[in-house]
Image (cartoon, rainbow, N blue to C red; front, side, top):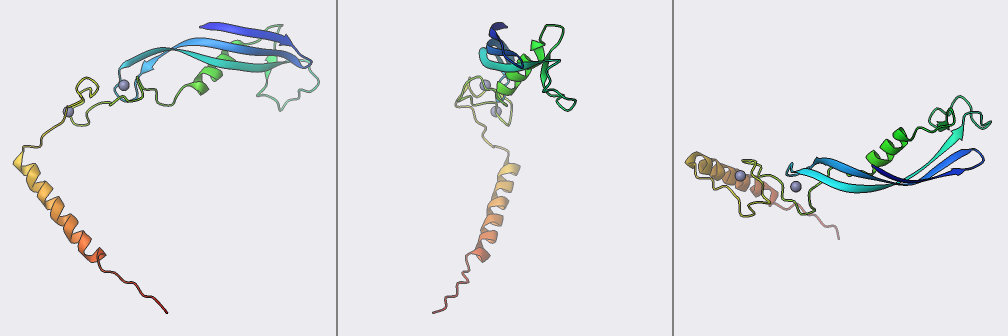
Length: 147
Ligand SMILES: [Zn+2]
Ligand SMILES: [Zn+2]
């Protein structure tokens, strides 16, 4: 992790701002290929002096300067985690995995499955008939117009 931070003394405490460059590793949310990329996040956090008068018991959320030092780790972790995409992908048009067999569709764009089993085609026919039967009553119109 590379940090480019500035520490400024302000009235209430120390203002830390800058950028953190982190290497993100994970896997593509669609095809599960391993991912590794550089990710830069902006960091800005104010650490309050512990004896600052503006602080009272209810401000547990605030970061503080303790023993003349600041705890950067939780701040950096929050900044990085909240900036990461919910579902990272290896590329925007990643085609993911075949839902039938799990093949990587990026490697084989023409990949598809023919349904050759006659039992399946019989089922497909049943499904077609059911759809036709359902459609019939819906075609009746029941429009009344008052003039
Ligand atoms: Zn992918
Ligand atoms: Zn497949």
